[in-house]
Image (cartoon, rainbow, N blue to C red; front, side):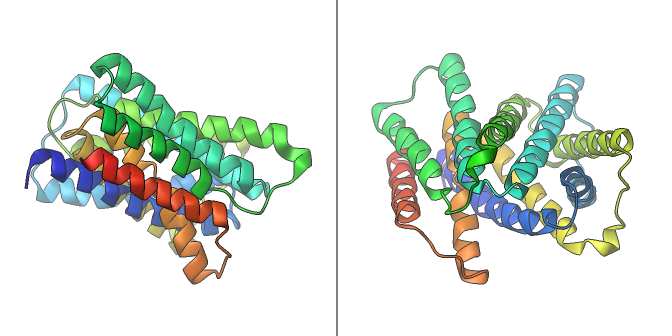
Amino acid sequence: MSATLSGLLSALASALVWGGGDFVGGLAAYRRAPYQIVALASLAGVALLLFFAYLANERIPPPPDILWAIAGGISGAVGVAALYRGLSTGSAAIVAPTAGVVSAAIPVIVGSLLQGLPPGTRLAGIFAGLVGIGLVSKTANGRVESVRSSLALSVLAGAGFGGFFVTIAQLKGGLLFAPLVIAKLAALAFACLILVIRREPLPSPASQPIALLAGALDAGGNFFYLFAVQHVRLDVAAVLTSMYPATTVILSAALLHERIRSLQVVGVGLCLTGVALIAL
């Protein structure tokens, strides 16, 4: 299997796993404050990634990679917390699609500036993927009176995720698990700091097993994305990974019996078209 194909498949695996984590984390966020869920999820991610880093006998990353990992961990934590907060307001119709498109657009812009525009077919695939991400995230929910606040939260969430995509792509040490351990430690420390400032307690991990599952899935998505971005362009890996809302929509329909709208079906089709064009 070629390195490029491995990277493409890993990016798609990241979308599947991250979509599952988003679904589970969304369920957990209905019962707890966003940064409480982020802290518990980060704790689970640290434990899982540390275990695999030990098995792989990975060394401590070089100082530049440590700094990039810390930046990525904090950026990702802000993105997740903003997404959960936005979804909890009932304005998913605004938050989810805007965050998805912004998170994919940022690395596309950065990748184009650093690496130049991709070939024509891949550029068309990226465009189809961006449109598909927006459509597949559409829901029937949303309150008109909270549009401005929800838009701000969605842009913040997308910027946080996009920042994670870009910063993690800067890792040069060739390691997979050790840098992500540092990123999750940074996310955990940042979330705990916010909880202290807000005087919110850290829930017992035993009381929120669903948040721990979300953290394990998020860690898996991080791993697959880092592997992907080491083998394909930043913009390609980020757009494919950002198709995770399709997984969330499918799980919501299958497990929660939520109705899939026609726009979402079109969005899934555009995502699949984007994948095919990018893989050419």
